[in-house]
Amino acid sequence: MTVSLHWVDEEDLLFTKLLDLRWRVLREPLGMERGTENNFLDGKPRTTHLVAVNNSNVVGTITIWMIPNSNQVRLDQVCVDVDWQKKGVGSKLVKEFLRVIQNKSTVKTTNKTVSGNYNSIFVHSRVSAVKFYQSLGFEIEGESFLEVGIPHINMTINFDDEK
Ligand SMILES: CC(C)(COP(=O)(O)OP(=O)(O)OC[C@H]1O[C@@H](n2cnc3c(N)ncnc32)[C@H](O)[C@@H]1OP(=O)(O)O)[C@@H](O)C(=O)NCCC(=O)NCCS
Image 1 (cartoon, rainbow, N blue to C red):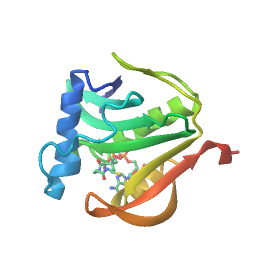
Image 2 (cartoon, helix red, strand yellow; image 1 turned 60 degrees about the horizontal axis):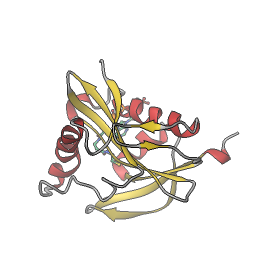
Image 3 (cartoon, helix red, strand yellow; image 1 turned 90 degrees about the horizontal axis):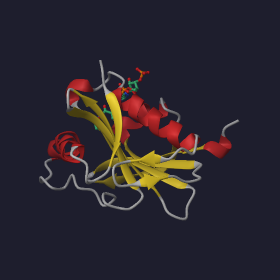
């Protein structure tokens, strides 16, 4: 399994492949229309995307939004190509994201440079993916709710809580 990780923005060539992957993994199985893979976070000045690439193909991706004037980062649109699932790609992406946030590192893409002092991360996890996020240190917060028609639950990591 060889994948390389790259931070990209909406102007990068890989972003089109990222959208294809989102659609195939996150939207098409729910019977949703093409185009719904475009997310409301895309295009925000403090939104960037991490992609896992193999042979020029995007096989996994996550989106992060460093919320302005906040200590919170949102993790979103997490997906791995079906042929690459359960091979460590999703963990590799999220661990790189955690490393960046914990070290307060700067994310650089072709058109954006984003950093900040963040100590809290949240993701709206599909209930089916809770174990995946738990394996990466996230904890459940609150009750489940519907998003894109399926059950989700808020999961968080608060670095201030860590000893
Ligand atoms: C959820 C998803 C992103 C995980 O990525 P992945 O590359 O398959 O996960 P990894 O191989 O890195 O697995 C990491 C751990 O999570 C577990 N895991 C992964 N997917 C899981 C799932 N769907 N249910 C339960 N556990 C899961 C693995 O067993 C592994 O634990 P282990 O190391 O103890 O064996 C991926 O399976 C996926 O795209 N699923 C469909 C879309 C989705 O649900 N996205 C999340 C939206 S919130």
